[in-house]
Image (cartoon, rainbow, N blue to C red; front, side, top):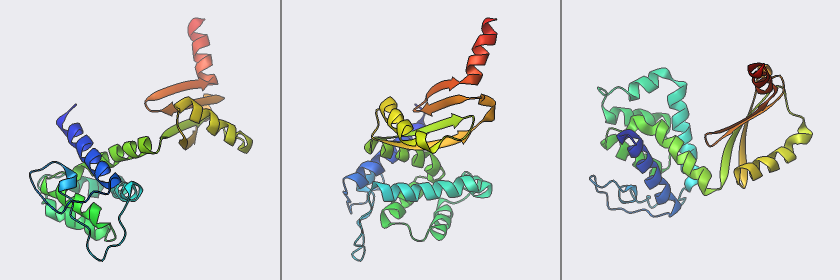
Length: 204
């Protein structure tokens, strides 16, 4: 595992565990890598303590801003730009972030790692899905599915992925001719007619 991937994994896991356990420690130590010891205590007038879902939504919003604006992405990936300037831009774009997320962003700024936010969001989302026993499934079909297939399809996917919840992403590709392709957790199941034709012609 590369240093960057390890850092992303550690940041996401530390943040996730901190929020999940609702353990906020006011002792801020710059040298510690344990996020639970870095994130500031919520202010006295903040009665709402965010959970993993709220933090996940905020990270997703920040990631969306990165990937929707090439200029913003380039700015955050530019090592010549000051981290505090990058932090200020994020806080200006998202003034309503919870104090916990703001504290986390300050930690990333201190370590010049704000550019890792999209990857941290992806890893945090992976942990969140595992936490709620959910699986993201991409379904590719040649045409739109009939509504009557919905319940049976979801039940089949839950059984296939051993999950209690399915987050389904459906796309259409007429080139498949028929059948479906299912993708989840780096697994791909190709049950399309196009594949059957390809196998047939390869054997001829």
